[in-house]
Length: 170
Image (cartoon, rainbow, N blue to C red; front, top):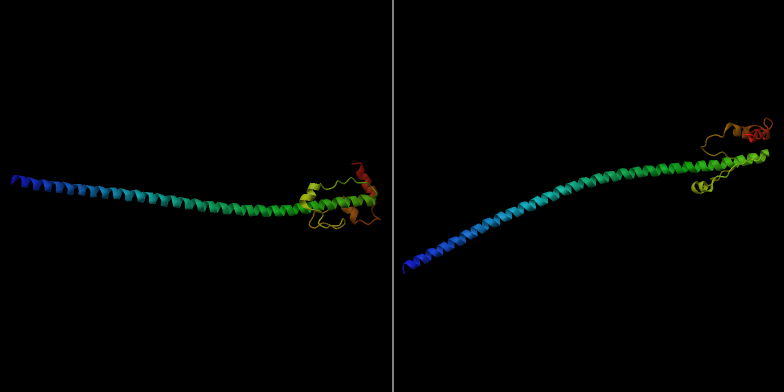
């Protein structure tokens, strides 16, 4: 009997020691697992930080590019407005010159074949902007010398009919 209680006590101690060893192993395993989990989470967070910084740089580059495109767009729009104004001036000058040539032909008694300004040009760029046939257009190149001469020479010096008849053979 005395042998059995000693074996029983050592078995209990041995079972308790094994249980303590298992608990220590489990704690160590849990600590290592938690450490791995924290490291993995830190790597994930670091990766997100790198990605966020890269996206910030891309956004900055896109903002700069968009700003440059907007600036270029404004310049092109401004250039288009200038060109449209110039086209309106040219269309108006063309209408004025055609009207002046018709009037000159009527006054001289010589039929002139002066084509009308194309309708699509008048629709795009407007009409004569209120100019009268004899008013000079603003900021336009001068008339050719032959035509200029007809408007500004005294009648006693020139004979418009004979001048225009010379153009019929051309």
